[in-house]
Length: 321
Ligand code: PMV
Image (cartoon, rainbow, N blue to C red; front, side, top):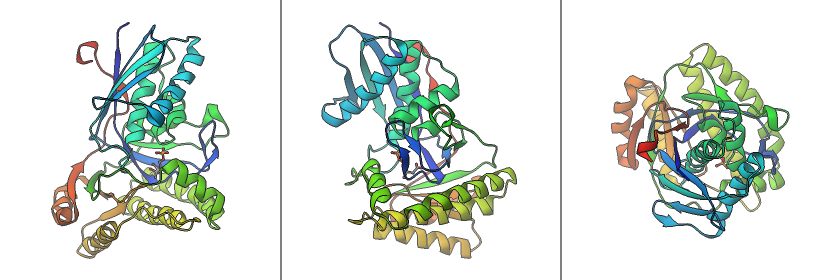
């Protein structure tokens, strides 16, 4: 059968998702908001066939173990909805270092949901794709959407999806400090946080407040307020992660040095705000005109790359497959 190919980009949350209220349905404990990037794409082809098992090739390497099982579990959902038991060949190319906190699971499952839905003839409206992508990796729900996206916590499977938010144009400077695979997956660390952090409840309720404030700031096109909420919410997430038993710490001394350097840039009048996901790399939110200056200023801490808002997951024409 012909392969269907889709491309998706990672997103970086400005209001973070950290914690699930339903693990099976991947429903988040609170809503979140992100910027989809125009770099580090994942391009994925899916074709269903008569083989006995799913096959998953990532960056030219045939996958086995947990990596393959995650894709198979996801394809089982697609098969269930399509009323089919055909196995699939999945060929994926990821431009970002996998598992280093650069949201490769978000672009990965957004591309897989889009390609597999098309290959299986499932609905291709953004809400259905976002709900499906969510089942692979929560943050993937947001990579279906272009630019700024809000992922609603919802009150069940049908209402927990991401949709676009009108906001000022924002760019990011990604400071890559360490490309190695993180030791504790976000899935595992989220579970640990909910189970053991004495601050978890406060984290969840304050995230809802941060999200409301962020939506208001986007509506007012108030970059300063967006930036302040972004940085404080990221630090709160890392604080609650560090408060687990046993503790988990994703930020390295160099990550903290970047956060400090960004504070100094603000003191010099350059509006920049830091955030970091479940890894040591830092993403710095800036207005488009400041991206090059900030990238230059932060180059001593790691590999820097200025990125802009990117497209939500989309199919590629057949000939590029
Ligand atoms: O979707 P997951 O399981 O990769 O979790 C993403 C968690 C963070 O990146 C740390 C936060 C977020 O909202 O993207």
